[in-house]
Length: 64
Image 1 (tube, rainbow, N blue to C red):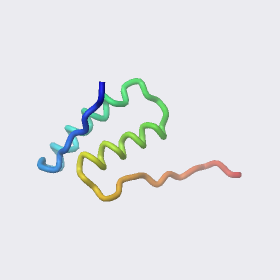
Image 2: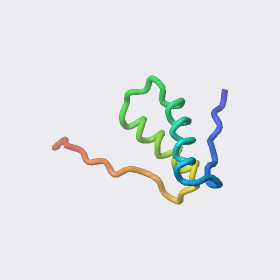
Image 3: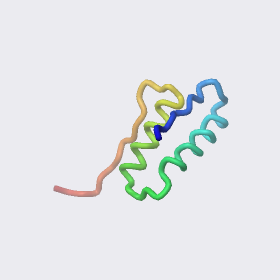
Image 4: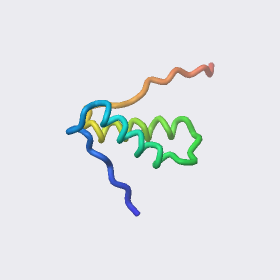
């Protein structure tokens, strides 16, 4: 079954974030991988609000 993406551009910011949080929680149930969660959150926010760019800057503590 295909998932559908919410479009919250017509909602107020707080209401839009609440709706997207509900969708995010459903999509990520049982997922523990941090990068997968960050990627999914960026996608939900990007398409939900119609942003030009959405992402995270991630600091890594690994030294090569």
